[in-house]
Length: 598
Image (tube, rainbow, N blue to C red; front, side, top):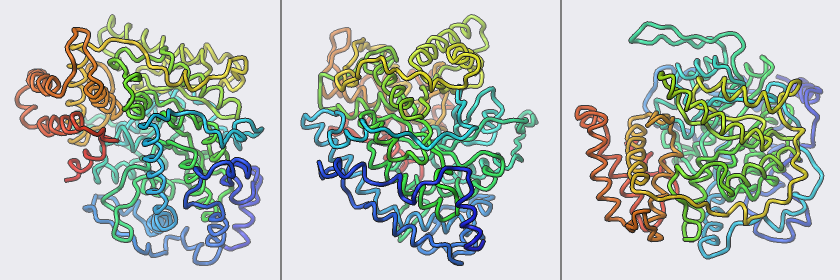
């Protein structure tokens, strides 16, 4: 590709062009001078360096022709059948470049998380940032939303196994979020096969035959829009090394999905679309904006070609939603209420403060004050800036019993009505059998002639203050609830250690967020000497006693053979280790990953 061709492509009028690096400029000179707390090693003048490095020389052009040797990058995972299709020299060269330019910044970003958490632990509660007030009060909008992402009334989420991808893309939904994060236990073979599966799906030639029945699955006409959720900044991919160190999992997922699929997606009128999880600050959003800008420049793509939706699923991020939108305004199209991880983050972030101890998870519903405020603020912020506001997950699973199934659908309907009334533009489901119910609710509230609720501004609402976002909810802490937490967590962790991360348990489709809530809730009760409704204090010894008893109940439920051949003992040991630790472990997936990949 010649320099002249690239220049012509860059100036095609598909997107309104901004100056290179504009989305990543400092929030404002005034805002940044107000405090040094927003500065870290990634400086805005790095964009100029990136632009210079991405000059359209013959060497850069060769990135697209798969002929660059990926210096410093080494795959140390076992060979997986078919991996040659995705580990091309071009994709590995891109990954190597991203690691070289951006991986060193991640430890600094994670250190900022630790510093923020230390402040909260010492008594400085989360609040809106004073030094970014100019952004919240300024007049600006995101760049825009591609046509195929304007209607997101119902999205289905799930792992990247072959059958699931086909069923999800064929479901009566608008979007399928293919999940490399909470719905995937990231063994090397699962990751590689998932990337192969998505490559085949994008090309339209994915098929699957059920070995037991011989039933064939293939894509139907007009499948759902594909969006890829990559892993968070806190995770490493130990099967790939750069400069003799494990690389950031987020960069691996992003580079592999982008390089293997962007041409085909763009040729079909779609694009490389991503979900970004676990953000905790606008500085992390700024880092992602620089990654996107770098890749767009490298591949002669219009600024804003890469699109993302950010999950607002941490308590610190809810206070920086407008700043996150601002930093990513060239690429972002929506924010999403990741409600289950948000509850987990609420517990984790406020872990030192007994006044914020939560009840059992069955009592923590979206009508509680702190969750309602979170939902309404997200809608208000998004619509003010021209972005979509997506609701959370309905994890219920349909059943074959007509009466029970009607109860399930009624619960889903009530949950989605609350989201639609708040002004959300769409929602998540975990099972295709819920699509019709969820879609009917949003059709009713959005109305004929509309595909979203961007016209609902919530301007008449009073300001939502930090006290509302932090207000703990009332509810029971029962022995039954604690025992249920234990059984769910053990069964989920056991399945995860066997490579399954999207697991049906007691009528709900559970993912990693479930286990995180279960174990942090009990940890919190132990730390703050909370009492069950019976009056019994929750202690480490009470937990271990209940765990021993519930292991026997689990064995009865699953059968002795399944129990003996499974990883239940390992799961219980890991669960005990992180639940009785004096210091709260940040993420279950970190010690779990070591066991999964041992």
